[in-house]
Image (tube, rainbow, N blue to C red; front, side, top):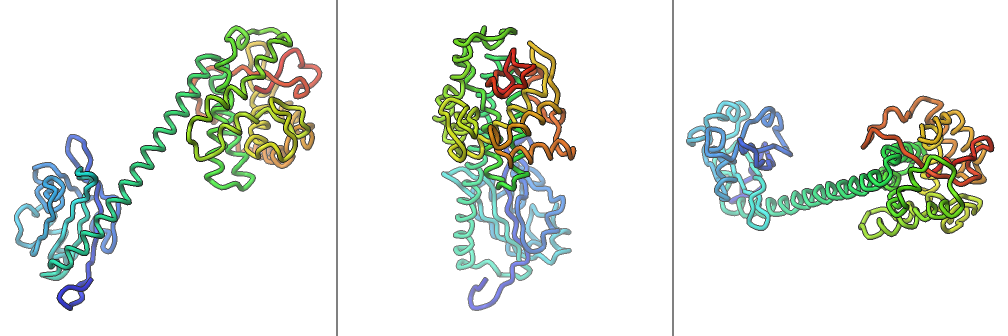
Length: 365
């Protein structure tokens, strides 16, 4: 930093965001230089002992605060000894404002008197404006992420209310699908999308009559055809949400099979999205492993044997290998997955997905 031709070293810089809590605290979120100065630093933007310093005053009044001598200024007593120990003599605090609303402050400390002249203040104000834009963007992204999570939760809950036996099933399928995706070396971004698709894959069941979903006897052919509509119904529900992943397409394809025997499109091989191939395996394993109202759980061993027998025909062999390894090596268990509801799920399968002895009902939703 140059001002009036001299080099001024700025030993510390602090970015803080103001909270709208009862104490009106300022939360340090970033620091550079003597960052140990921030350790347990107590600042507020209230009109009290901890809010009358330069930072609190800047936030409260929305004004730039230049302090030419921290050793003498009133209102700095709570931090004077700390500043002295670090050699801080002067400070500049710039309010961070977005659309007229103060969201925090940028506090800069110097070990020289007279550091912050007009040119320095103007330059650092530009820096503060850039910082405000970045923080606001992050806040907007976080808000969008929370909204997205709420939307996912609402959709999942909606389908679970319609079909109480689905409660927990989607969550477990999402968790297993994500674990398989991680094991396959997919990126964090892709893994997140697959998890979301797993948590929503049965949302289309809301379009299936509840008396069919809850019937504890073998369904008729006509009733089974109604159930087979749920991937397309799920696609129609989800496709209007601007996900950063092809969630709607994964939901649509989660009953497709490599040999073209699946539904609703009869896709083959690489025509099926990788995420959907992962969902297909996770869906089958979860459905067979857990209790259903029309039968006791068939067990994890039988579920793993089923996907192993179908590897390369119905299921992606790489996905099957990863799924089997997760369970055999003890790196995943359904009992560790937090559920959105205590109820178990009820799902319907394709006939070829079930061992001959168990074909009175289906096993994959």
